[in-house]
Image 1 (cartoon, rainbow, N blue to C red):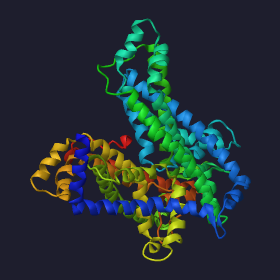
Image 2: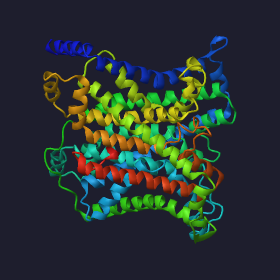
Image 3: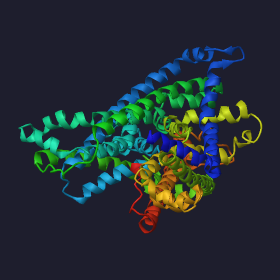
Image 4: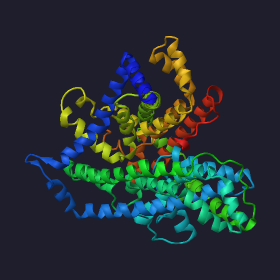
Amino acid sequence: MAKSQSASLDRKKLMADPIMMTTIVLLVAFLTIFILYPLAILLVDSFISDNGLTLDIFKRVMALSNFRRAITNTLKVGFLVGIASALIGLLFAYVEVYVKLRTRFMEGLFKAVSMLPVVSPPFVLSLSMIMLFGKAGIITRFLLKIYDNSVYGFWGIAIVQTLTFFPVCYMMLKGLLKNIDPSLEEAARDMGASRFKVFMTVTLPLILPGLGNAFLVTFIESIADFANPMIIGGSYDTLATTIYLQITGAYDKEGAAAMAVVLLAITLVMFIVQKYYLEAKSTATLSGKASRERMLITDKSVTIPLTILCSALAIFVILMYICVPFGAMFKTWGYDFHLTFKWFGQVFTKYKGLKAFKDSFVLSLISAPITALLSMIISYLVVKRNFKTKGFIEAVSMLAMAVPGTVLGIGYIRGFSGGLFGTGILQGLYGTGAILVIVFIVRSLPTGTRSGISALRQIDKSIEESAYDMGADSLKVFMTVTLPLIKDSFLSGFVTSFVRSITAISAIILLVTPSYLLITVQINEFAEKGSFGIACAFATILIIITYSSVILMNIVMKYFGTSRKVNLEEN
């Protein structure tokens, strides 16, 4: 009863606050127009023709052998990558939490592996795989003397995606393992159980929902991935690449929309299971932090094999990333290994690199603060306010996490070059830099919102209420009380959004026009042509930009924030 009265009082306060009401209305409008509307247009395109409601478009698409093959290929890759990434992530997490690492070198390796995929372009490992193991690869051609090795296809995609996505599982599972009470495992050990039996009967059942959660997150990332299959897939089509080719090669917008709906349906089902079932179950299983310090494993028969295995894998991943700068400095990869800077020179003289970096940097820099602020506003409304559309705002802002970039790109094409907004102001967005900024915002919004919600739940409500009691309005309270308290999350959201935007490709490759040159699109174009020197030069400069951004933001956080570092992994 008291809770109901409190919620009613909160709503009355909200109705009397014009600034807050205007903010909510604008937010609902933004989320509806730029997330729900493009997806709704895809459904309309897929189910409605001149003859009314029909399944003819789906029937036509399903009759295409390449589409049926793409669905099978996508699911096969997704399941393999999901399982492999979850298991490798569990191995790394277990070694970090349970095994005594003897050197700081190992800790540095683990940290580098967890950070690299976050701040690097999504297709760097594909470039490295081709340059190391392809027909002109250093390892295959020059070390092993294998002259006809091909890395393209199923195994190429699966290996690259696993190496790209397993750090995500590692970060998720590390947190779960840290929250297990050591006394539960030590009790089993005291009763004579071996370490393996303790792991199988105590540890594994506790983290099983979290392991399933890690699998589904990686599965969704894998089937939605566009960049890696495009570069290293060869003739092995996946749904994301098939949709792209259907609209750019066959010029079949309706067919591409129907394919996009199929991919969206798969990712949405997985997202709902992951978000509302497994994530909740993981939280319920591990409620609270460990009650005592864990006794780390020091037995050499356990520590040495696990440390060697993780070190070897971590070094291999890091070497693959290091391969890209060298690819930009060799005269002709695979044939002439004399060092040269001609590719870097051609980036700026022959291939309009300055414009590409300027456009990418400016658009990402515009979207980053808007995304960070929007994320904090949504987080504030979700955690601190009660109103009827709260559930809608939270659900739709998180929905973009489940929408593959290719699907969103087609939704924007169909929605803003025709559809309800075929004419007028919104139609004028199509083909402009504004639509690219909006896509960047929509894609990064869920990450910032999750970070903001976690930070706001730690702030006592009475702190803000005292400001209201002194006569401050909602805007003043948010700007002078709430935002300073969560400035770490704001700054973290800012840099994460910038990095995600400047390295994005799947959503924007369908929307970018000749007016704008973006770095990731350039890298993808040259990699497809086999011009690896230029592609690596672009990628190297992009990696320098993203790493510099993170380092700069860590310096800002050190002197102006309440914590010491931007932790991109937790976002």
